Image (cartoon, rainbow, N blue to C red):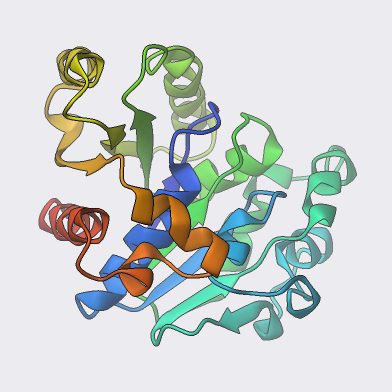
Amino acid sequence: MTKIISIANQKGGVGKTTTAINLSTAMVAIDKKVLLIDSDPQGNASTGLGILEDHRVPSLYDLLSNGEFDKKAIKKTSIPNLDIITSTRDLAASEIELADVANREKRLKNILKQISGYDFFFIDCPPALGLLTINGLVAASSVIVPLQCEFFALEGLSALTNTIKLIKQNFNSELKIEGVVLTMHDKRNSLSELVENDVRNFFGDKVYKTIIPRNVRISEAPSHGKPVLIYDTTCVGSKAYIDLAKEVIFNQ
């Protein structure tokens, strides 16, 4: 049975898309088959996997607008066993276009029901708590929350946890927090240690043991249209995402 995990945080710049790309790639590296759904109108997950803009149609926007699955929307990446449903700028309009549509919150869930043959679906949600993120949470069985190791890390998390509670009460009773992953951790910086302690105190054993370090190779990889595991297999960032993938699987 396919496990559906949304990667969400309404705060931008926390490593959400970077985690979506590299966790997906790490899963493939340990023999899983993955479909990544780029649900962010910025389309950074699509760019980060080397999918050019003129190769992104049909995209997630077309699927949500039509309410029907089109197998042409699944694009092969350069990485075997890692496919993607891409995003385009048009996706931003779907929030308005679907506002009066019945069961709009379940649009993505109904589409994903028609797709088989994968071990994991990862949904890269936009950095907002709008209809696209709600669709991602309704479709998923759980959520991974990336948190940047900086001063305002916990700011706004109450809004996300409240949204998860509301989704659980009204649309998806199985939804849970799969885990919290600390990103951009700098062991030379005492603030990173303080934030880590605060987050572990707040979320307890929901926080993964694996920490994603601040690493220049992770930052460089997207500009080459590659996950860091392909761009530099041996760097500390690549090793961290492999460890995270193993931890996610172990916790299933």
